[in-house]
Length: 157
Image (cartoon, rainbow, N blue to C red; front, top):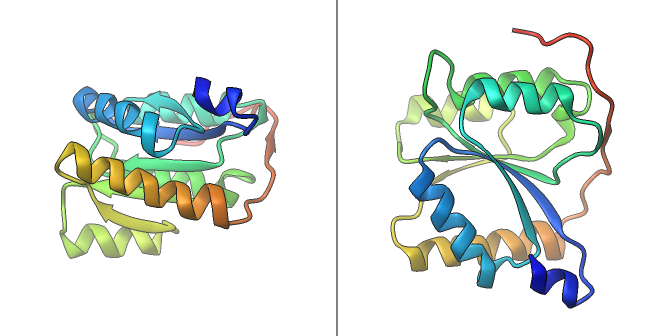
C-alpha cells in the first residue's frame, strides 16, 4: 500500500470477506508485490459484511472478493444475494473464491450475479499470480463505476 502511494498511484479498495485468517494473511503478503495498490478491507463473517455494507458512507470498494463458506448460518452466497439487491452494491464486481469446485455452488454464484468464480490458489506463488492477474484486469484494464454510498436506515435480512 505504501509503495502505491509513493509511486503516485491511487489505492484500490477491495472488500475481502474471508473467515480463514491464514488465507487473509497470505493475500495481504502476496499483494505487497503483485498488487501493491490493493487496499484490503478484511471482514470475517456474514454479519460483519452486512453491517459493513449497510453502514458504508462515501466511496465504496472497487471490488469484492468473497468466500463461499463463512462461519454461522449464512454463506458468502447469502451475502452476494444481499449485495445484488442493494441499490449500489449491485454495481460492485463480486468475485467468488472457494476451495470448492462443486457445480451447485458455481451455478448458484453466477445465478446470484457473481462476476466470476475461482477455486482458491494453493501455494503462495499461486496467490501472487492470481493477484497479479486480478490487478492486470481490474486495476489496469477495466473501467469501474464510481459508487458513493449513504448509510442505509434498514438492514435487510
